[in-house]
Length: 221
Image (cartoon, rainbow, N blue to C red; front, side):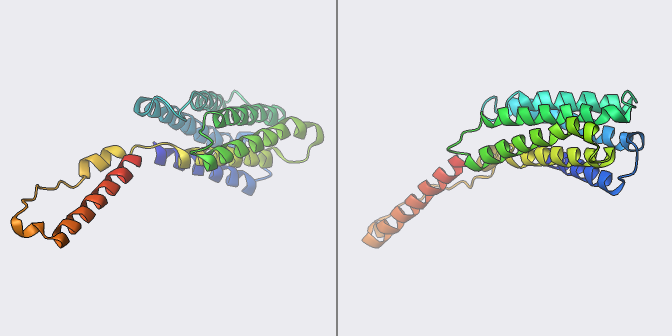
């Protein structure tokens, strides 16, 4: 699911780029692509949460992922069903979506261990704050008319894509099982009188220390 989450983030960014390249289009023209990408993103997010909960059941995998996934999925379905047809309402609807997503992202950063995952904590917090700020433009733009609907949607989709991409990159994934399956087995070695020289004993001690270091590294993976 980690790879699928990263791919879904890239798809959202590409959708935003598509909106940038078609600034004069109405929402109805862009609706199918945007709705489809949002539905796919919501499904992948929900599965990522459920699978991650089953594997770990603790740590950074908290309910905000599922909440954001459900909001994205429902909004995507509404778009595909042509329930959002008024261009004037689009910026505010998507603005609310982005603001809520940003707030949930900030809340998610509070569950990250600041000492062990400092970089993850900072990127999650910063992207959450930026998402909220950008979402506020959904409320400001209809009153001032700075950007066209397509350009504003492009900004929203790119920001959400960055959020999803960051989530996928930092998503926990299992490594221990692979280490245990493919760990090399060593056969016992018979020690004879000829092996009791100081040089041989020192060599065995070095090999033992290397094996202990390797075991410690594998446990941390």
